[in-house]
Amino acid sequence: MRLTLHTDYALRMLIYVAARADGLCTVSDVAAAYGLSRNHLLKVAQTLRDIGVVETTRGRTGGIRLAKAPEAIGIGALVRATEEAFSLAECMQAEGGSCCVISPACRLKGMLHEALAAFLAVLDRYTLADIVRNRAELGPLLGLGAVAA
Image (cartoon, rainbow, N blue to C red):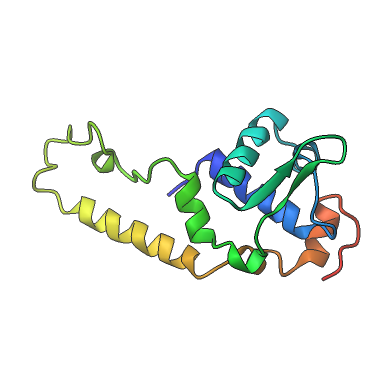
């Protein structure tokens, strides 16, 4: 399974925001830290706002911050909310997913559904807090300097 860039960037943005001591940053801060497109990250920030995990404020002192405690942001739920499709194979697509000639008798599709469920079940065991437990190590890598653990 490969996550979309949108989900990857959403996770990275949340890690950055959670690793900051003050919890407030701009999309430009995140873009600079990871070397990513600011325009793409604007869309990611909007998605994160829409699903309720970040708050955004406009203006000179504006930015983004977590809307919930890191312990309340489940990674499995976040991935489900940011991924558009979980088609591990063509036959799993909602529309047009039956062009494989053996699809009516194939058992692989069920196995792939089971594997996807296991993948998401593992992610369901973790929160953003689990990812940023090593803030002291993440801070310098993200250009945040020394960050309190």
